[in-house]
Length: 203
Image 1 (spheres, rainbow, N blue to C red):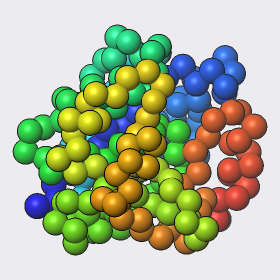
Image 2 (image 1 turned 180 degrees about the vertical axis):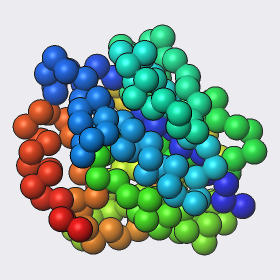
Image 3 (image 1 turned 90 degrees about the vertical axis):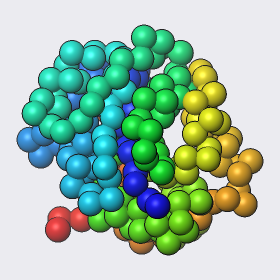
Image 4 (image 1 turned 120 degrees about the horizontal axis):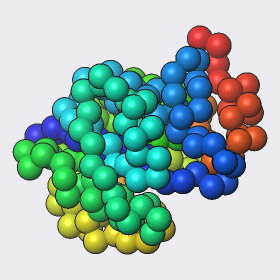
């Protein structure tokens, strides 16, 4: 029990970031989406990485050239994140026990964080929803969802992500404390990136 597939969300237009696709922004010589994909591929607990594309799909796919990932195109990407999560979960391999839902705008995510989440998922025999939490107790991404909740994820639509489900299923959730909050930062606007880079530890 504990085989994980990662759904990497890379379909949005990132309108708050400006005219450029934030997922293609250079992070230490690599596009942001490739940095996130590399972190997933570097985690020993992740058996499959599936990338949900939409806006700017050819460029996103090109940014992930030669990586061991699968691609799926969400034709309704303009409707919001919910449909991308639903499609990605539905397309994961049937033998997986859980789905790791990962936004593509987490440029400082580390394999060690993913492995900590995966270890907790394994400890709970694949039955708990597992997510990272800050020292203040705030829930962050990415989130591991057990297969028993795949049906709920596959019913998501529009801009709605999994936040509402996490509230409704609070009794099935297990938080993993991540002391270094910088590895959990996401980038919404262009101004977020310099601030996030400054906050990132030098090591």
